[in-house]
Length: 483
Image (cartoon, rainbow, N blue to C red):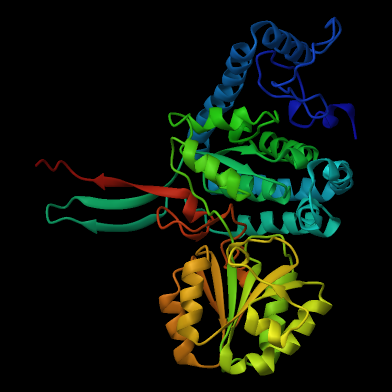
């Protein structure tokens, strides 16, 4: 790799007023209490600016720190807004060129990406990540190839921008059309899944939106490496380089600054733990697309095929336990519990899953632990599942309504009437019949990669793909009509 290419998106001259921090250089920590080094001579321009800024923060205290951070975040938001206006008018072909080039760079630089990710994995214990969280953080060659394929799949999707949603000709001859347009600027906050960096950027750019990415500190090096390739591809394909920007300070106050910028940012999408999403919901002055928890249920009806049920429960729980559409609770109809639960318990035990059950479950699965009321409300994101025996389908649906998060809930049954009843009554973003909860996913639903799953009713619900990142405007064509 040449020295020029190693700078990624920062090739060429540096602007001393740019808020960007070149990859591989120290990230500004505006909370640092350590004094800066005594000399700044010989440093490159941006690094010299960092030290000067940090020194000013020490002299000025918290007010100085907040002023510098406000300037940094405001600059990123202004650049995103300017890029969004250019991007909205960019052709679908140019956006697809960027997607293909980004996929190509991921494949070409896979060794560099795996190496950067390995450093994040090495630091994972410092952040107290459990095994499932480390799995979410990990990049493998297989996952990188999946990311590249996802980019290519998004390129195959129709360009939503400019689509005429509907139209009509008024009695006076006025042609009124409703046309799909981008939302504008997306502020996207996420935690330890670096593949989301690519998914989010791809969906935003394809749908004509600029995006500000704020990943978790535990994935910082992985995100920087991926981000460098995305911006390199933007430069090469003629799209605005600020269409995708990465927040490269780990200061949590940066999030608060962005959340106040309703004049620059059109929507915020948080993707992570409940505490993050609650904070964003409370502080944001712009609309938020979100879900709080993924307390997903699998209900095994009395008519279920047991072989199918066992296979689907294991897949829903174990295929990737640390994601939001993994099953967290198993409900079993009392009429089939005696026949089904012992074999299901053994299968879960063999898969390494800890079972927490009610009294009727523990009679049939003696090694299960006692479940508390809180267990049934918990998104474990780990190899733990709560189990309950219910009297009938109505009891199962009441439990889902009382304890669930309206994310993804599944029924396993051969009774069409039961399936129809379940899909009508259960009020979740995705209701699934005889399939794994893991299918509530943008790619699996044919949307391409997703930027998140929403449990809201406005503006989007379920997996958020291209169309969910658009709005519309009315365009009227006349030939001189007056009112």
